[in-house]
Length: 237
Image (tube, rainbow, N blue to C red; front, top):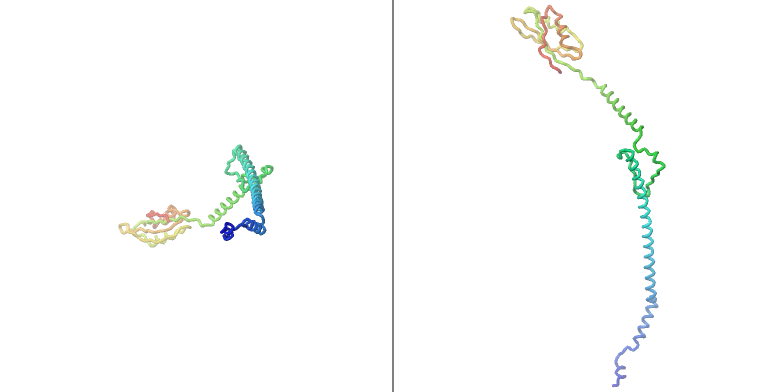
């Protein structure tokens, strides 16, 4: 068998280049040339990058403006604090200045004279008026409350002249003493000696109206029956 016959009997692909070219043309016809696809992809990526860069530039400009506004507000605030320190004004009374957000800060130097940083006399007058009203209300309430009356319990020893004195008559005379603020209580006869008994009688008095000296003076007026009057006990109620 000759060489040509051997090659003819083997399945050798002599037209591979033609088939590769045909396959390439087919795919380019479907998807377009490879160079065009790469060019389109690069163009889309560049466009997206440009958009992002513009967005970043815009944000950067906005931030610069915000920072500038904040610096201006801070500078005005520092100037005001320096001015207040020069006039020896307590910093605690200075009204706080809002610095955030920076876009809303609006400090007008021409209107500074109209701002009342330390209150007004009207507020002081209003506070004084409220305080006076409260004092008057408390005084009126206290005046309506009934005053506490001071009282005392007194035990008196009333001695007769002798054992022949009518003790019932003596007690009747003692109880006949009627004074505003005087209230007689219980009584009893206590033996003294030699058949003589004394009248021991209790009474309650208002301290501002009745004293022991008044009681002694009134009781000793019955001189035919009463020899003396002594205070046996005196207790505050």
